[in-house]
Length: 248
Image (cartoon, rainbow, N blue to C red; front, side, top):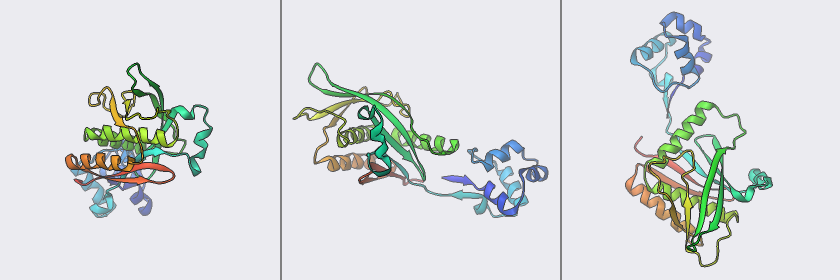
């Protein structure tokens, strides 16, 4: 992640945006956007003017941090125990994703056995569930990264589908009949997915004692074809993945 460190430098040097504007001619709006992390790039002549007036090195102004991205589904334990108090808890899943600070989305679903004897899960909707003070730019960046990761490899949709079903099973939210081998999942309603790239339904193995092995298989498929390395995390609070873009 590339970050323009203007705000911190202005504070350290006790310089105002107005002063920078008067000395460089760079518009106040541009300077304000850079200081607040809302810009996606910087022109060379702007960069040169800032380095001159701020009397700093380029590595002080432009910072690169390779941040690992996390996404997974919350298990109701500890700080997340209150999730079980929601009246619709049995029909909800909670997706957590982000870099340093995670954002949460509530996913509502329905489940039933169809006329052909196949157990089906259908996503109804998803919405923000974060009450934290989450900067709009951080949220947009995290959602953008989640979309990019999901769209990077077609196996990501299979992995995500299995991860969701696995979470629902762990939380006892599915009444799957005995001897059911596969579960059919429809994820088209999820707002952070590219509708052009997903299949109408995903057929995923019913989670069992081999679930970790299944997750590893999806992970290997993705790493063989894609640009991400994936690390599985499974503890009492979450089943999740840490994703690293090794090409950055």
